[in-house]
Amino acid sequence: MLVTYFHYGLLAALAIALLVAAFTDWRSRQIANRLNAAIALGAPLFWWSSGLSLWPDIAIQVGIALVTFVILAGLFALRWMGGGDVKLLTALALWIAPADFLALLIIMALVGGVLTFVIGAWNIMRRQPGRLSVPYGIAIAAAGLWIIGMNYFPAASAGAGSLG
Image (cartoon, rainbow, N blue to C red; front, side, top):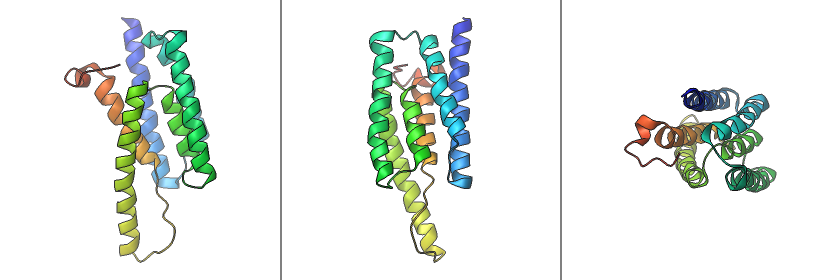
């Protein structure tokens, strides 16, 4: 029973960290390295509380995080993505099951598209031409919160077919 409370406490801490990431990205267009590190360092505790085995469960989580980092680091090198966003998504890949992580990426892309459109329209209305600065951490956090709420908390996931 204590492990269950600990497990949901970790998920609540992750949700709070995602809210902080979204807020700081909105305010300063940066996501702190300390916040991303805390999210990544919390993953092994979550693995333990989830009862994941070292092979293949944890190995898959780490593998997906590595693939995520390599792909997103390429996008960062092309200046298509911010460094904090790369680190946040990589840290989230350590927490979220593979199928759920794919859903997270799809939701993030949809929310990010709407966010980009809204910020672009706002800049046009204010007659501020130039390169858009989109706080994509908001889209990442929104997608992460959606996945956590729908798949990892029992009350929400009871009707959604929980995987976690």
